[in-house]
Length: 488
Image (cartoon, rainbow, N blue to C red):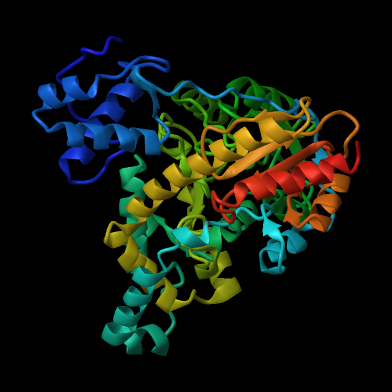
């Protein structure tokens, strides 16, 4: 498209606020998502934008900078602003194709504790950046909640399904992403991991087979192992997530004994650890295939708020057909310490709420009240937009550093969204050994075998940028390169 495209209007995107620059950025974002401007196209110049939209040049510049912050556009010296090109996708390896028992090394607890080790840069656990946490706002909301409703919050148990105000706020938040559910269809949980475990408890029995993306988040694999379930792997890509073909192959294979899969766990918005996002047409196809096979979908939406600027924000459950459950939380945005998550369990509502009730009786009321107020204020939407822009910037810095300082044979699977980066080391290097060496150099990373039910991805690492600020990334790369150099 040429630079003289004018008359832009409408859309929900990089801006999302109420200023003139916000509205102009949202308008440009909508046109990019619709394909009016494609990767590599030159955007309207500052002069053209200002004249066409009736704004001053400073406002036009600010709108274009918002697109840059959102990862949608990039300035080129003396040439103008261009739609950012698509990243290169990488599928680390095909899925195993047959049911596997889950056997993981006992590293998960160590990884979660790395953030508290003095002198250790924590790129292991995928935690939100401390500089992005809304501490001041949450402190104020907490004080207000206790002052206004302290007797109720501290003096009684909450509804077993969760605080009604919080369930209403979550329903409105999901509505903004295209999933229409009433508050009475939502159950509050102790984070996303408990939501996933509740979903598995409702639809599986020991020995059953569940299809899972590969590589798979090790927390999901631990939950599957804890329930005595077997896994069939679905190869995922760092740009397009899992493919309909991979899902169909798993459905045909079934449980390996002539029966169907018990469930399929997918993260279509933002895959962990690869960062891929399933395209809309593929989401619709997967939804139809699962419905036709009668296999319940368990949607892990933990990173769903960090979808890339060109990705569709709708959960897979927003598309018609079949049974399924959505599991999410604010752990990656507002903070994991609050332990606020949710499940939308569909036809398994009564079973899930009973399991939750037997486990907890209820969930902490003050935290629920604070998050309900935060969501109602619009704070979460603003926080997620800021986090997406910041993590995109950090990932870009990390990729640039790795390409400069890591061996040439290193493969980087560039993500479409999220806070994680997956890389594969040169042949002959073992991720477990590099992880140990990296700790000696003051850096924690997660080895690939944790993301496989049978210890696959032996040469891969996951790096997370949430806990490492942009000014720390060059040093993190230096420490990783030094760990790799120990073996060369």
